[in-house]
Structures are given as C-alpha cells and as structure tokens.
Image 1 (spheres, rainbow, N blue to C red):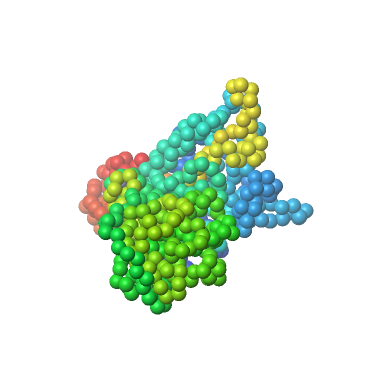
Image 2: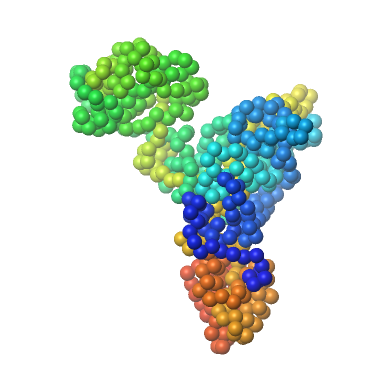
Length: 560
Ligand SMILES: [Zn+2]
C-alpha cells in the first residue's frame, strides 16, 4: 500500500469515549470507528488485521475437519420460540417486524438454524458425525456496551456445531475443537487460561471458557502458577482452610450496641473476621433459610443455588427476619426456627462469634455442637491467596476477556427441535450436540491489549496489517525515493510505502501507532549503500542488496 494514494489517517488527540488502551489506540490508528453505542466500523487497516485473525481461525477449523457454511442474521422468530429461547434471551435479543407484521430476530446465536440444517442430512447413524461452522455477525442488545470491541451489540463470531450419535462421539468432537482452539491461541500468541464456566442460559453439561489475560477483562479469574488449575469465581473452589483448634469455651452473651456488620463486630471485639460467622437469611422458593459462612468470605449464590437445586434465591427482608424473631444485623443460629445451611469450614472452627437474634447482642465462643444444621457444602466465593484445590499453592487473581467458549450441549436442542436418527438397532434417538464459539473481534482486542504499548499497537508479525513499513526520510531526495519504490515493488503485499511528503517524525509516529513490526528507513546512509532496519528493539544498518534476505530471515523465524 502506498500511503500517498490511499485512504489513510491517524488521530493525534486522545480518544475520550474509549475506556480501554486497545480501544483508544485502534480508533487513533484509524482501524475502527464507533458508529453508535456498541457498533463499530472496521476501516481498511483494521479489516486487514481482522481478516488475518479470521484466516488463522478458519485454517484451524478446516484442519480439524469442520465444514464452513453461512447462515442469515435475519431469522424468523418462530425458530427461537420453538426452542423456548425467545423468552430466555428476552430483551437481549433484537426483535423486529417486517411489513406484514411478521416477527423476526437478529440472530444472537445460531443453534436453532444449525439443527434445521442438520435435519436435512441426518437420517441414520451412518450420517454422523460432522461439524459445521460459520464466521458471521451476531447481535445482542447489550445493556451496557463497553471496552471497545469487547462488549458490543453487533459482533463477528465463529460458531461451530458438532453432531454425534452418542456421548463418546461428543467427547471426541469436543476434544478436537479444544485442540484446534489451543492451536489458534498459540498461533495468535495469546496468553490465556481455560476455565470451567457455569452453563447458564445455553443449557448443557460442560462449558469452558478460553480467557485471555488482560487488564480490561470483565471477568475475574483465579489461577494457579504451579499447575493448570484456573477457574472463574462463579464456580471456583479452593483447598479447604485449616483452622487452629482451641479448647472449647463457654458461650458468653455480649452487648454490641449498633455493631452490625462483620467489620464492625471485628473492630468492636478485636477479633479477626475469620473468627466471626456471618448469618445471612435467604428466601428460597418462598421459604426462609439461614446461611452461615466464615466472616472473612462472601457467599457464592451460584453454589448455594446448586446445593438446593433451585434458582429462586433472594435475600430476606428486614420484616421477614423480624417475623422469625430475629433482628437484621444480629442473626445467629442459636434458637433460630428456620432450616440452617452451613459452609463446610464451620466444622473446623472453634469458639466463633455469631449474632444473638436480639438487637445489639452477639454470642461469643459458639461451636458447631451448639446448634443443628440441615445442609452443608462449600458456599464461599474464593479469595486471592486461597490455596489451589489441586496442588495446594496460592491462587492468584487476574482479569480476563472471554475469547472462546466450547460447550457440550448434549441433546437439549435436538430433543426440543426433533433432530433424530435411527441407531444400529433401528431405534430413534436424539443427536448429541456441541457448540463452539470464538469472538473474532474480541481476539483482535485481546491481542492489542496484550501487546500494545502506550504509543503503539505493536502487532505480532502474523496479525499485523502489513509486515514492513518502508520509510523514505526525504521525499525530495531522488535516490531515497528510487530505492524505496524499488523495495516496495519487491515486497508489495506485505509492505506499506510511506511516500507522503511530511516530516519524518510524523511517519515514524504513524507507523509505530498502527503497529507495523518491521521498519525500513531509507535516509542519508543510502549514499553509503546502507539502509536502517528496525525490528522489536534492535536497529541494524544493512547493505541495500541484503535487505530482502534480512526481512525474510525475520519473518521466517517469527511466523507461525
Ligand atoms: Zn495448583
């Protein structure tokens, strides 16, 4: 690309309405531009990066035996009504009507349509397995679009779906995708962790997330440096805590006027929060329960919900608490007439503090023998520094951006939508499915976040819009111009020729901003037949005739 006769611009000023480093740089580099809240255009240089990423994803999907097709984004709503997902998505899905008042949606994910496509082929077990995918736009009416290309309302996704005759088949298909995804992350040079996730609105039996480690992530993940354990906080667990055993003392009732929170109690009694037990009251399926956890932890509602096998969980009101003869801020297990659920740590704690169920009173030296409980389980949200459940080393926390999400769907969609096949014994069975998403533009943001400096997008060689920037220092120097043009003719598709008649500082800044990995600078040294080449932190002077070989050496060693 010759900059003098193309569409090219960069912005000098800071971009105020982008909150992330990558978002600001991508806009300043003229790679993307915001059209509306959570809606972006990809400009020529940005599109080149996006396509480079897309091609790596496509190659690895094809290598794994998946077959590409293309689905529409505009879809009759009835498909999502049949699967009962119209209601589940609710306002997250874009709904619209055509001129005949018929209902349509803009596809948020495409399970329903892929099932319909599979039905066209699948009759018997001999028609299975196969894996279909597309790279296409998806739409979600996000409440709060943010972080540049991370949470947007229109986004480009690769979604694949596998179809198998049984669970063993699904395991094989799923593992193939995991292998392909690992290869993709490796080729893109992304630092990531695979974490187990909650199956949520998609339904299914196993869900994992590929989380790119970034400062701007929306998710917090916990990971172990010593082994491969990593998890999101929703489902994460840690090695059970060890507590020092003390001699059991007698219960004392203490006056704690207006001392309500765990922190207040800790300060007032000069006792660490780990020696205080937090008693929460929950309304679960219209029945009140007390939930007890160590005072230095927060309750994990996802775990509570799993323990009681229900999603109808909410905190009780002050009035509800008064109705069970207790007092908000002073609830405790002794003398309470509702079922009690305890965190497993309580078994090992001695002489702890609880509420007395009387306004302004707590009880000290309470032990597990002093009350009855009905349920026990791990109910804590893990904390940084908790121990790894696999190897016992300390867990670290980091932010992550979910870039891929493989999912074992099982027979949820095939049963609902009638995707069946005849097995070896001529029995009709539902097809076993998996689905595998990758956010293409999210990958682009994650790569930018992980590689960018404050002034440069700093793309890795195989993602960069162009590998080489050719910079003649003085456009009025004929010798420089001729050598630059000659080099450009040889490199063409891989190179940008900055032949603008501007100050050389402007050229350097722009090429750095858009993140071209190799810079070839043709200046005064040309009179000694030398060209300067910059790659990463090294600068070399090379003879003109050796420059192509030097570039080839760099790219050969770096390209995956
Ligand atoms: Zn570990």
